[in-house]
Image (cartoon, rainbow, N blue to C red):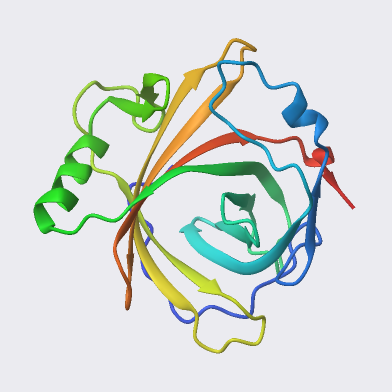
Length: 214
């Protein structure tokens, strides 16, 4: 991954990626979620999801994140790959569940979140206790690391001329669940150009592309 993904020029209209865009239905094979082990913190959707907003992040080196925000705001479907226009390759498919969202009310609270984000371990507080995650990005060193930063352009309509722009500072952590697969934790600090700052704690799992039903 990259330490810094730079602000880019005005984005084109959002593309269709794997047949998905604003107004389309995300239909997933629920067997993926019925087989989750008891110690996994991930929660899967029980019904189809309607895409109500779409985000795009240019990662550089011809790699992009395409984010699909559904009507159930507990979830986010993310596709990493090409630009979705000339290059339609798909490198990774992730489904994220919003475990928690916090809204720091002071600069000190914001800096405290940023400091915890830099550490090699992240203790996530849950209803049943604290669960430790290990840093997945920059995991070759125990030293504190600056988060990945990037801009995301979010549209709620395909013909929306000016997207909502959100500057984000993020770090990825992971833990191995009893089924041998990783529960991923993405801690995402979000600063909209004209909005309230927020910190999202998302639990994610990678999905095989065939789990996305047509």
